[in-house]
Amino acid sequence: MLRLNPNLENLPVYQPGRPIEEVAREIGMDYSKIAKLASNENPLGPSPEAMAQMAEVIKSVNLYPDGNAFYLKQALSRKLNLPGSQIILGNGSNEIIEFVGHALLGPNTNIVVSEYCFAIYPIVAKLFGADVITVPAIRYGSDLSGMVEAVNSETRVLFLANPNNPTGTLADSKSVQDLIASVPPDVLLVIDEAYVEYLDDALDLLPYLRSGEQPNLLLMRTFSKIYGLAGLRLGYGLGSEEVVTGLEKIRQPFNCSVLSQVAALAALNDGDHLERSKMLNRTELRRYEARCKKQGWEFVPSYANFILIRVGDGAGVYQALLERGIITRQMGAYQLPEWIRISVGTEAENERCLSALEEILNP
Ligand SMILES: Cc1ncc(COP(=O)(O)O)c(C=O)c1O
Image (tube, helix red, strand yellow):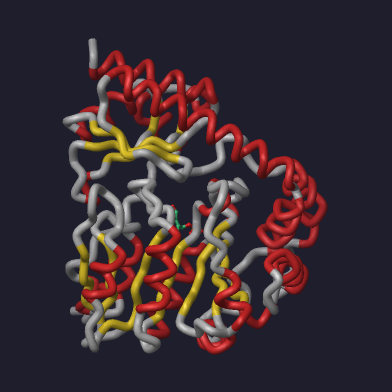
């Protein structure tokens, strides 16, 4: 008998949004007719600049990538005005979460999260044998002072996604500043900013890192959302030199591919694509909100690129949408069985999704 890590026994396998190919096969619909509104990707696709750069380097993928991603780090460093020694790249920001687990978690430790937090935080904690302290949400938003109060002597990490996935809620600036000031210095505060680029007046947390006054703060960002590069897997962490140096010891030398490095560098410089993506998201989120109000469907006002809508039988409505070629996300695993999460798509995809919802919910 193999003696698998006992932490694996009760660990759920993360269920991502279903891929288009699989659904196309299952319902017998053409790939091109399926709308995937399940994983908060950019409906406009990758930046054209990123695609051009990838085409350029495709002939050299026989070579390993630059393990230190010199040019991408240099560009991030300039853009963020932060030394490269405070930046770590991950194979998606999910990998940064895993680095945090390796660096800080084990038996007799715990993490503090909010109810309805991003699913990977508790999965990684349990993988490393750590406990998860879940603080009840307030109207679907994270209770930041409650989270600080929940910290105890075994707490090693407090995770906050802001905006949060899957609720789309945003903690206000004052609460975030208070949180940063009150988390004990021996607890790593991870603020996950996967959706920060969608905000108009995002609270800028970089000064805390530049000044060195907050060595226990780690910010996470990603190229998977507004930058439209989810398929390439590239995220990054920003923290003190002490934290980044620690996490760098865990990182595999070639965790970021040649293609992801050049695409991310190009996407970073493609301000037009970023702005188009942000504007589309804003307009289309308003479409969802207006329609929910008109139809009397409860929704959580969103600050990200998706929206949570209360549909009653979440699993049933998810399935009914799936049969119409629209992939959304059911929320049972988040203890929100009456809700589905819909990622903002193109105008045509959103109209199609909303019409289908009307047909299903208000026949
Ligand atoms: C809050 C949050 N953090 C991190 C991620 C992971 O993103 P990636 O690993 O693609 O960078 C996601 C993806 O959905 C997310 O919603």
